Image (cartoon, rainbow, N blue to C red):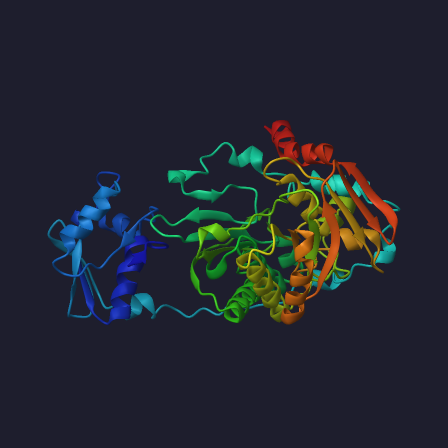
Length: 480
């Protein structure tokens, strides 16, 4: 079986024949069409979506068609596999294609475009914290980040669409990953789509690697083991050496990280020439990761569950404001180094979190990404299933307050759990050799943060939830 992507029926038929070292004979007059009068050229190159090409074992064609018709899908027998290599295609009794597979599949011009590291990277490589005013409190920055369109709730969008197709949705939108049941089994799949284009602008290789790591981290926080990835690579004009360099580095970043995590890239597509008046978009190699949950009873969500639970942080916070939401929203800057990604530590953090979930030791898990630690904890407060829960954080650090709360260091997960399980969790963290710290407690009507004994943020939880929940809708109302 093969999905029909770029070049439609042409690519799927030629590629399947080439891999099998056999041949294919097809009759285009038997292909289901949405329009009358289509030419063979149009039928072969059409990229109509939601189509697949199957090779059915002889004698079972009727069974296959019956299954497809049961699900209301158009299907037709359009050809057969033949011994003679090559692809032979007819239309209305006339042969319109007779070609060997090699020139079409592997024989095209091997184009190697020129690459060149962009000069802009030399100008924006560093963030000098001494040039950024250090706030005495974090309330103002915290509230601005909650209303940022990259962080604010997307409920205004997803509530307008059916997100419970066939009633298989187990985790509704708003958590780290969507979770869907696999009917007839105890299993489920978790799906997460990720990419931070600012990180990719600053460092395409590392930014793309972070996209893969975050996608895996998100499905892990849902209780799933990552098993596969697809991508959508969005870039400017590849004829420009600087853009081609971005593309090359991003592809390497995805490939190397997938190899390390041992997950296959099963499909993907490319969108190039995304420019306006010669100005390219930020490189945006978006990835979608799928994870497998063996037992639906062991699904995890990001929301705190009960007051009085301890809040813990897996991972360690570094001085990494480069490319952060904080730097963009508060200072309108996109510069500095993207956060470092230690793939070995990332994998250990994910495996530790997954074991905590499988052993039933924690009640919530949420990865730290845009906006940093403060935003991650706030989102877990907002996502509490019964009533919004406040939180009290008490942190110790030598970092600046804004860096500690809004740095976007990788490989961090916020968890919550009953206090009596603290010792078990700390011992398991030691066995995985990952950083783990107790940072607070759930409950109350306020969101408070103290750093080294000094109050840094204090807000009413319902007030900040309202800012987070309504900002996107207000913005859409102003622009439509």
